Length: 245
Figure (cartoon, helix red, strand yellow):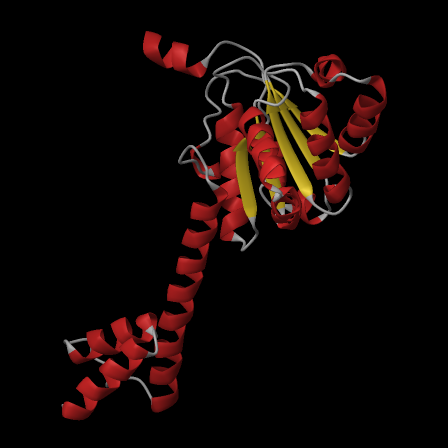
């Protein structure tokens, strides 16, 4: 018994929490008599593996800074909003992320753009991908502060390393010169290598005007649009419809 306590203590000190839980459960009444030594070791390792994977996913989700809890399985198709379940299922396999393609989700306020983007982001985290979810306007403000502080390259490098960047409310506010250049740097760094999801109430055809500066807008949209998939949501706000119900 003392040896078992010592083993548990060593597992704890080595941060083998999955093994610790499994071994403790075997001592607390779980019968391992039917397992061979090899099977018992495999069982302990499986617990440790699952524990580490779950903690990694939890870290990725926390670091992504999602604003909502969302999942692919909970997306509502019962309301007619021009949402194709087959397309969502195809997007959920994340091949568009691995191929560095972009995704635009447009529609009126409350039609579920952010929820769908978040659900895809959570799915990416579950596949051990790095995700960053940010409001576009606030991110541009954060980059301005970083530039004034001399940390702009560090921030841009962090964004560049994310497998999936989700920019919420894209083109809701006009871009000034500094924001345009920051956006250009982000898009250039990710071009054909990393995926970007943009949610917006503004139709894609109007983005050019909001970005401003013909030369920069051309460069940004040329890199964003030509390899992008699109979801164009229709109809009224889901929040409004749910409130009426």
